[in-house]
Image (tube, rainbow, N blue to C red; front, side, top):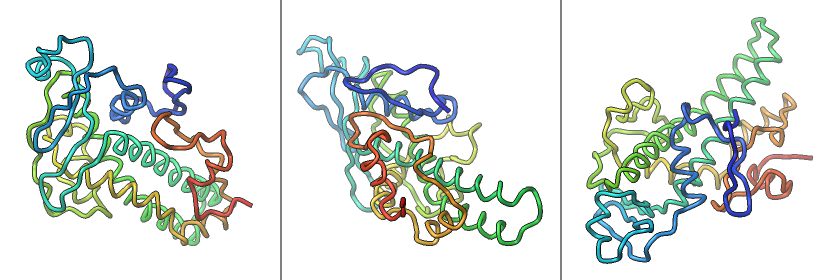
Length: 260
């Protein structure tokens, strides 16, 4: 579903955005696409770096950085493998995750339509395959979206995070079941503190994107006549992702798919 209005960001427009009430991380992502003018000075603690948007007197920057809006530029894990990831990479992973969610949902809809409402063992098996593969993407996307919505709240209020909760006993292949952030319970998510799991989730989404969808899923899509270039494709400028209108670049989003 599209956003109710589209505002220009530099030379282009964000298109096919999700509704804000569904995935609140969109606010963080759009700010990444059109960043505010900031001071050159970068503030940092052990887990996050940020800049102070103008206007602000230079000699007040350090004091104001804890009370006026700030702009997060990168985040770092505090547990496990040490990973640093930029704001642009976080936002790019969010768009990739949203498009993957739509990809699996649209493919599932094609299979369900072919079943025509009747009991069909082959279609049931195909649906299970789609849900199995989509679960990995979806769990990482939910984890990332939830954290970005919280980070947006913090930077708007001028409060850089000082620590993350330690992420334990999680499986990046199934965060829906193993995340401790409550991503499967919208009613309780707002009360949870942020763990650094979202950084691993974003990194995993970027890796999945590089790998492309599984051969099993591709062959399934081909067998049911699925057309991925007809997807409701989310595009946000200035994140290093192609626009759907550029057919060759758009097809590179699905590097292992046969479009011919």
